[in-house]
Amino acid sequence: MKKAVLGVIGGSGFYRIDGLELVEEVELTTPFGAPSDTYYRGQLGDTEVIFLSRHGRGHRILPSELNYRANIYGMKQLGVEHLVSVSTAGSMKEQIAPGDLAVVSQFVDHTYQRCPTFFGDGIVAHVSLADPVCAHLSCDLTDAARSAGAKVHENATYLCIEGPQFSTRAESNLYRNWGVDVISMTAMQEARLARETELCYAVLALVTDYDCWHQSVGAVDIGEILRVMKLNVAVAQQAICKLAQALPDRRRECRCADALRGAIITERAIIPPETAARLRPIIGKYLS
Image 1 (cartoon, helix red, strand yellow):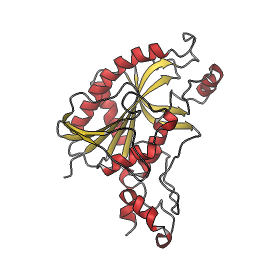
Image 2: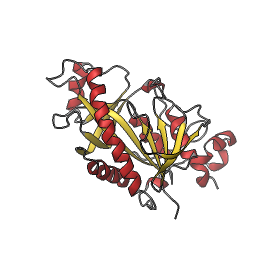
Image 3: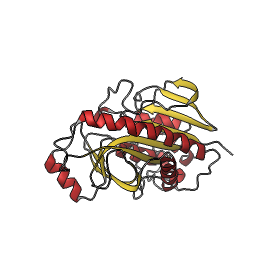
Protein backbone atom coordinates (compact mmCIF):
# COMPACT_ATOMS: atom_id res chain seq x y z
CA MET A 1 0.00 0.00 0.00
CA LYS A 2 1.23 3.50 -0.83
CA LYS A 3 2.52 5.42 2.19
CA ALA A 4 0.69 8.59 3.22
CA VAL A 5 2.34 11.91 2.39
CA LEU A 6 1.37 14.72 4.77
CA GLY A 7 1.69 18.33 3.68
CA VAL A 8 1.78 21.10 6.28
CA ILE A 9 1.44 24.81 5.54
CA GLY A 10 2.63 26.78 8.55
CA GLY A 11 1.24 30.23 9.24
CA SER A 12 2.27 32.99 11.62
CA GLY A 13 4.75 31.64 14.16
CA PHE A 14 4.74 28.10 12.72
CA TYR A 15 7.89 28.28 10.63
CA ARG A 16 9.22 24.73 10.95
CA ILE A 17 8.28 21.25 12.19
CA ASP A 18 10.20 20.08 15.24
CA GLY A 19 11.49 16.52 14.99
CA LEU A 20 11.45 16.37 11.19
CA GLU A 21 14.21 13.95 10.13
CA LEU A 22 16.14 13.41 6.89
CA VAL A 23 15.27 16.93 5.82
CA GLU A 24 15.73 17.84 2.18
CA GLU A 25 15.13 21.30 0.72
CA VAL A 26 13.08 21.27 -2.48
CA GLU A 27 12.84 24.34 -4.69
CA LEU A 28 10.01 24.25 -7.20
CA THR A 29 8.74 26.33 -10.03
CA THR A 30 5.12 25.97 -11.06
CA PRO A 31 3.03 27.12 -14.03
CA PHE A 32 1.48 29.61 -11.60
CA GLY A 33 4.73 31.16 -10.46
CA ALA A 34 6.89 30.74 -7.38
CA PRO A 35 5.62 29.31 -4.07
CA SER A 36 6.08 31.25 -0.86
CA ASP A 37 9.39 29.56 -0.05
CA THR A 38 11.42 26.38 -0.33
CA TYR A 39 9.57 23.18 0.56
CA TYR A 40 11.12 21.00 3.26
CA ARG A 41 10.72 17.24 2.81
CA GLY A 42 11.47 14.86 5.66
CA GLN A 43 10.16 12.08 7.87
CA LEU A 44 8.09 12.03 11.04
CA GLY A 45 8.22 8.38 11.99
CA ASP A 46 6.95 6.41 8.99
CA THR A 47 5.19 9.36 7.38
CA GLU A 48 6.74 11.54 4.72
CA VAL A 49 6.09 15.20 5.49
CA ILE A 50 6.29 18.21 3.17
CA PHE A 51 6.44 21.57 4.95
CA LEU A 52 5.99 25.08 3.53
CA SER A 53 6.14 28.36 5.41
CA ARG A 54 3.08 30.20 4.15
CA HIS A 55 4.45 33.72 4.54
CA GLY A 56 8.05 32.83 3.67
CA ARG A 57 11.13 32.90 5.85
CA GLY A 58 11.15 36.06 7.94
CA HIS A 59 7.36 36.45 7.42
CA ARG A 60 7.59 38.75 4.40
CA ILE A 61 4.41 38.06 2.37
CA LEU A 62 1.01 39.61 3.11
CA PRO A 63 -2.08 37.37 3.05
CA SER A 64 -3.30 39.12 -0.10
CA GLU A 65 0.11 38.72 -1.77
CA LEU A 66 0.38 34.96 -1.25
CA ASN A 67 0.59 32.83 -4.37
CA TYR A 68 -1.96 30.31 -3.16
CA ARG A 69 -2.08 28.48 -6.48
CA ALA A 70 1.68 27.93 -6.60
CA ASN A 71 1.74 26.79 -2.97
CA ILE A 72 -0.97 24.16 -3.46
CA TYR A 73 0.23 23.09 -6.90
CA GLY A 74 3.68 22.47 -5.44
CA MET A 75 2.19 20.24 -2.75
CA LYS A 76 0.42 18.24 -5.46
CA GLN A 77 3.65 17.93 -7.46
CA LEU A 78 5.43 16.54 -4.40
CA GLY A 79 2.88 13.76 -3.91
CA VAL A 80 0.96 15.20 -0.97
CA GLU A 81 -2.46 13.64 -0.37
CA HIS A 82 -3.24 14.98 3.12
CA LEU A 83 -2.75 18.72 3.68
CA VAL A 84 -3.01 20.52 7.01
CA SER A 85 -3.11 24.30 7.33
CA VAL A 86 -1.91 25.77 10.62
CA SER A 87 -3.25 29.30 11.05
CA THR A 88 -3.49 31.83 13.85
CA ALA A 89 -6.97 33.22 14.40
CA GLY A 90 -9.02 35.54 16.54
CA SER A 91 -11.98 34.25 18.54
CA MET A 92 -15.50 35.44 17.81
CA LYS A 93 -17.11 33.59 20.73
CA GLU A 94 -16.65 33.89 24.47
CA GLN A 95 -16.17 30.16 25.00
CA ILE A 96 -13.27 29.99 22.50
CA ALA A 97 -10.51 31.50 24.57
CA PRO A 98 -7.01 32.64 23.62
CA GLY A 99 -4.74 29.62 23.85
CA ASP A 100 -7.41 27.20 22.61
CA LEU A 101 -7.26 25.44 19.25
CA ALA A 102 -10.07 25.08 16.74
CA VAL A 103 -10.49 22.49 13.98
CA VAL A 104 -12.43 24.09 11.15
CA SER A 105 -15.31 22.52 9.25
CA GLN A 106 -16.83 25.52 7.43
CA PHE A 107 -15.79 28.86 5.94
CA VAL A 108 -17.22 32.26 5.13
CA ASP A 109 -15.17 34.01 2.47
CA HIS A 110 -14.97 37.80 2.81
CA THR A 111 -11.95 38.34 0.55
CA TYR A 112 -11.92 40.12 -2.80
CA GLN A 113 -8.34 40.29 -4.20
CA ARG A 114 -7.43 36.62 -4.67
CA CYS A 115 -7.63 34.12 -7.50
CA PRO A 116 -9.79 31.26 -6.19
CA THR A 117 -9.30 28.60 -8.87
CA PHE A 118 -6.85 26.75 -11.09
CA PHE A 119 -9.39 26.72 -13.90
CA GLY A 120 -10.12 29.17 -16.70
CA ASP A 121 -8.18 29.74 -19.91
CA GLY A 122 -10.44 27.43 -21.86
CA ILE A 123 -11.47 24.91 -19.22
CA VAL A 124 -14.39 25.12 -16.79
CA ALA A 125 -14.85 23.03 -13.65
CA HIS A 126 -17.29 23.37 -10.77
CA VAL A 127 -16.29 21.40 -7.67
CA SER A 128 -18.47 21.14 -4.59
CA LEU A 129 -17.48 23.13 -1.51
CA ALA A 130 -20.54 22.23 0.53
CA ASP A 131 -18.21 20.46 2.95
CA PRO A 132 -14.90 22.25 2.28
CA VAL A 133 -12.62 20.15 4.49
CA CYS A 134 -11.97 16.44 4.77
CA ALA A 135 -14.04 15.07 7.65
CA HIS A 136 -11.69 12.08 8.14
CA LEU A 137 -8.52 14.18 8.28
CA SER A 138 -10.22 16.75 10.52
CA CYS A 139 -11.23 13.99 12.93
CA ASP A 140 -7.65 12.69 13.02
CA LEU A 141 -6.38 16.23 13.56
CA THR A 142 -8.81 16.79 16.44
CA ASP A 143 -7.70 13.58 18.13
CA ALA A 144 -4.04 14.50 17.64
CA ALA A 145 -4.49 17.98 19.11
CA ARG A 146 -6.35 16.64 22.13
CA SER A 147 -3.72 13.99 22.74
CA ALA A 148 -1.17 16.82 22.71
CA GLY A 149 -3.03 18.39 25.63
CA ALA A 150 -4.88 21.15 23.79
CA LYS A 151 -8.38 22.37 24.43
CA VAL A 152 -9.93 21.84 21.00
CA HIS A 153 -13.15 23.23 19.56
CA GLU A 154 -14.53 21.05 16.77
CA ASN A 155 -16.60 22.03 13.73
CA ALA A 156 -15.58 25.66 13.83
CA THR A 157 -16.63 28.17 11.18
CA TYR A 158 -13.73 30.27 9.92
CA LEU A 159 -14.31 33.77 8.55
CA CYS A 160 -11.60 34.71 6.06
CA ILE A 161 -11.10 38.47 5.66
CA GLU A 162 -8.82 40.29 3.25
CA GLY A 163 -6.61 42.11 5.74
CA PRO A 164 -3.87 42.94 6.42
CA GLN A 165 -5.61 45.24 8.88
CA PHE A 166 -7.65 43.72 11.68
CA SER A 167 -11.39 44.43 11.83
CA THR A 168 -13.07 47.59 12.96
CA ARG A 169 -15.24 47.20 16.04
CA ALA A 170 -18.37 47.61 13.89
CA GLU A 171 -17.18 44.87 11.53
CA SER A 172 -16.29 42.58 14.41
CA ASN A 173 -19.77 42.88 15.89
CA LEU A 174 -21.34 42.34 12.47
CA TYR A 175 -19.31 39.17 11.95
CA ARG A 176 -20.43 37.90 15.33
CA ASN A 177 -24.01 38.10 14.08
CA TRP A 178 -23.03 35.79 11.23
CA GLY A 179 -22.36 33.02 13.75
CA VAL A 180 -18.70 32.49 12.88
CA ASP A 181 -16.28 31.06 15.44
CA VAL A 182 -12.84 32.33 14.41
CA ILE A 183 -11.50 35.03 12.12
CA SER A 184 -8.30 34.98 10.09
CA MET A 185 -6.93 35.80 6.62
CA THR A 186 -5.62 32.79 4.67
CA ALA A 187 -7.21 29.32 4.85
CA MET A 188 -10.25 29.80 2.60
CA GLN A 189 -8.23 30.04 -0.61
CA GLU A 190 -6.20 26.99 0.37
CA ALA A 191 -9.43 25.05 0.94
CA ARG A 192 -10.76 25.97 -2.51
CA LEU A 193 -7.57 24.98 -4.28
CA ALA A 194 -7.01 21.83 -2.21
CA ARG A 195 -10.45 20.63 -3.28
CA GLU A 196 -9.65 21.30 -6.95
CA THR A 197 -6.42 19.31 -6.60
CA GLU A 198 -8.26 16.47 -4.82
CA LEU A 199 -6.27 16.77 -1.60
CA CYS A 200 -7.66 15.92 1.82
CA TYR A 201 -7.54 19.27 3.62
CA ALA A 202 -7.94 20.28 7.27
CA VAL A 203 -7.30 23.42 9.30
CA LEU A 204 -5.88 23.79 12.79
CA ALA A 205 -6.60 27.33 13.99
CA LEU A 206 -4.45 28.62 16.86
CA VAL A 207 -6.60 31.08 18.79
CA THR A 208 -4.43 33.99 19.90
CA ASP A 209 -6.93 36.66 20.98
CA TYR A 210 -10.52 37.78 21.18
CA ASP A 211 -11.29 40.01 18.25
CA CYS A 212 -12.11 43.61 19.14
CA TRP A 213 -15.81 42.84 19.82
CA HIS A 214 -14.81 41.60 23.27
CA GLN A 215 -15.21 43.99 26.20
CA SER A 216 -11.82 43.02 27.61
CA VAL A 217 -10.10 44.07 24.39
CA GLY A 218 -9.26 47.71 23.84
CA ALA A 219 -8.01 46.78 20.39
CA VAL A 220 -6.31 43.78 18.85
CA ASP A 221 -2.82 43.87 20.42
CA ILE A 222 -0.15 42.35 18.20
CA GLY A 223 2.22 41.97 21.15
CA GLU A 224 -0.29 39.89 23.09
CA ILE A 225 -1.07 37.87 19.96
CA LEU A 226 2.61 36.99 19.56
CA ARG A 227 2.88 35.95 23.22
CA VAL A 228 -0.09 33.57 23.03
CA MET A 229 0.99 32.38 19.60
CA LYS A 230 4.26 31.02 20.96
CA LEU A 231 2.35 28.91 23.47
CA ASN A 232 -0.08 27.68 20.81
CA VAL A 233 2.67 26.79 18.37
CA ALA A 234 4.34 24.48 20.90
CA VAL A 235 1.12 22.47 21.24
CA ALA A 236 0.49 22.55 17.49
CA GLN A 237 3.94 21.09 16.87
CA GLN A 238 3.04 18.13 19.07
CA ALA A 239 -0.32 17.76 17.35
CA ILE A 240 1.29 17.55 13.90
CA CYS A 241 3.72 14.89 15.15
CA LYS A 242 0.87 12.83 16.58
CA LEU A 243 -1.14 13.22 13.38
CA ALA A 244 1.83 11.95 11.37
CA GLN A 245 1.93 8.86 13.58
CA ALA A 246 -1.72 8.14 12.73
CA LEU A 247 -1.37 8.44 8.95
CA PRO A 248 1.00 5.67 7.74
CA ASP A 249 -0.81 3.14 5.56
CA ARG A 250 -4.06 5.09 5.93
CA ARG A 251 -6.42 4.35 3.06
CA ARG A 252 -8.27 7.36 1.67
CA GLU A 253 -11.93 6.45 2.05
CA CYS A 254 -13.31 9.96 1.65
CA ARG A 255 -14.54 11.63 -1.54
CA CYS A 256 -11.69 14.15 -1.67
CA ALA A 257 -9.62 11.99 -4.02
CA ASP A 258 -12.37 12.14 -6.67
CA ALA A 259 -13.58 15.71 -6.14
CA LEU A 260 -13.14 16.55 -9.83
CA ARG A 261 -15.10 13.55 -11.07
CA GLY A 262 -17.94 15.02 -13.14
CA ALA A 263 -16.86 18.59 -12.30
CA ILE A 264 -15.05 19.35 -15.58
CA ILE A 265 -17.79 20.33 -18.00
CA THR A 266 -15.69 21.54 -20.94
CA GLU A 267 -15.65 19.19 -23.93
CA ARG A 268 -12.28 17.45 -23.84
CA ALA A 269 -11.63 18.01 -27.54
CA ILE A 270 -11.68 21.79 -27.20
CA ILE A 271 -9.51 22.18 -24.09
CA PRO A 272 -6.47 24.23 -25.21
CA PRO A 273 -3.35 22.01 -25.21
CA GLU A 274 -1.34 24.54 -23.21
CA THR A 275 -4.03 24.64 -20.51
CA ALA A 276 -4.22 20.86 -20.40
CA ALA A 277 -0.43 20.65 -20.06
CA ARG A 278 -0.39 23.19 -17.23
CA LEU A 279 -3.08 21.35 -15.30
CA ARG A 280 -1.98 17.79 -16.09
CA PRO A 281 -0.91 16.96 -12.48
CA ILE A 282 -4.44 17.95 -11.43
CA ILE A 283 -6.68 16.76 -14.26
CA GLY A 284 -4.55 14.23 -16.14
CA LYS A 285 -6.61 11.22 -15.09
CA TYR A 286 -9.76 12.87 -16.49
CA LEU A 287 -8.32 13.67 -19.91
CA SER A 288 -7.80 10.16 -21.27
